[in-house]
Image 1 (tube, rainbow, N blue to C red):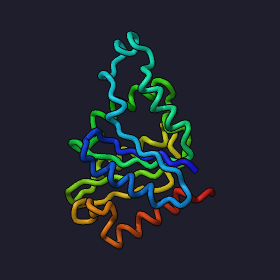
Image 2 (cartoon, one colour):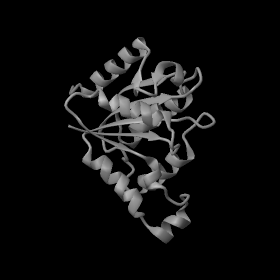
Image 3 (tube, helix red, strand yellow):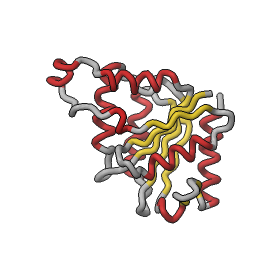
Length: 177
């Protein structure tokens, strides 16, 4: 089984990338690919740019990564209550290749932030829109106060209750029903 995991963030120190990577490491017997959105940086989407560029190779490459995966783990960073500009721009480009960006893949949606909200606002947006764009959302989890609950040195969840919830979310991702 091939898991594609990524943070919907272009921060080089992304806590969402750390969370996505950790979550993916909990999937038994999986081959994991952890993407960095910085490898898929594109010009700001507009219909004018689309007419000029068509479907850029990086957008197609990102779409192809989703195609090659069996399951997806996406962890959303929140900027002003919404998606990061980097993710939204890449998503806009990829959605022009195929509106079903997530290609009906079983998907685990995560989010985290340093604050109490755990990026819950962007999670609500993702839960609402992801199925429309072809995500088969099996589970979701927001992690509040990331630095209080995750050991960034050892790359693991230190809050046992949240870790158990994440394990349960992974089990739902793996549920074939």
